[in-house]
Image (cartoon, rainbow, N blue to C red):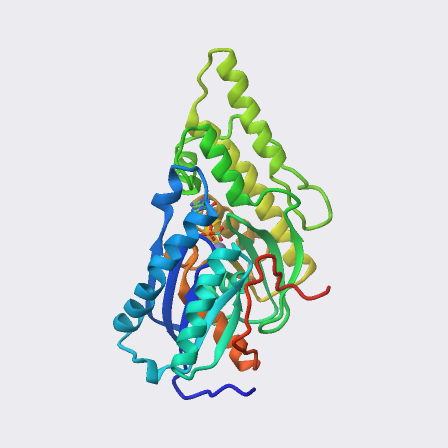
Length: 345
Ligand code: KG4
Ligand code: ZN
């Protein structure tokens, strides 16, 4: 199927893979005309994490409101749209199905093609709103569910060259945050505390010396938790800002060293740092410092903070690429909660 490219390709993009219902209207994969995000964080906070059934209920309540608002805010009417895009995976199956059903219904009712988009490709393409992506490029994807290094040889081709063997970086942030009594998700708060503290505990830097590009954060999480529990048993109170700084230093050192090695082994024009943890100020500063020293010719791209978390605009940007490749879906599109966009390497 060829893509009905008009001079002005307007894509309505739907994202509902986890705990944000979001719909955007994106022009030619580069310009955001609207990006409505309904966050459910307040509902999940009291459970200390995302409860899938609660997430699905919220998506059902929010999806049509978000679609309507995204169209109104963009000033685009359905007849002017070129396509509807939707995240089909990875994510929570119930949550994904709601976005998919809504997108299918809207596409069918308005006689529009449907573009299936991988959520992780969406995170990468959030960088396209900063500057056009050039190839080959590397992406470090760091979110609550994923930590992976992705080599992108050409537009729309993704190869995972390394990933976490246990916890994702964001997951580790959220778990240690809970031990410090912070509310979910605690990455941002730990980042702010780390800024005020010092790396006095020297937690382990797992797998930093290994030649592969895999990561592991569960040992760091256990060291942190043991340190806090042991001190509590001794009746000592450790400085929470120093604990945060020590934890963060370990995470960002491993992420930066491994990403640098990856870019040395696979020379790239750009490095994209994306996903919720890409909002981390310590990570941004260390990456900028180390790359300007060791690989100054590699252009570093950090999406704006509001596009690091889940949103529809990033799905619209990645959808534009899929459409140009002729990747469309029919009415039988299903959710693929465990899907991976990586090709064989
Ligand atoms: O990409 P995202 O919004 O959702 C997933 O697809 O997982 O990422 C959410 C994760 C959470 O674990 C949250 O704690 C983390 O991103 N996060 C941060 C920061 N802001 C959000 N982690 C570290 N530093 C931050 N500033
Ligand atoms: Zn995400």
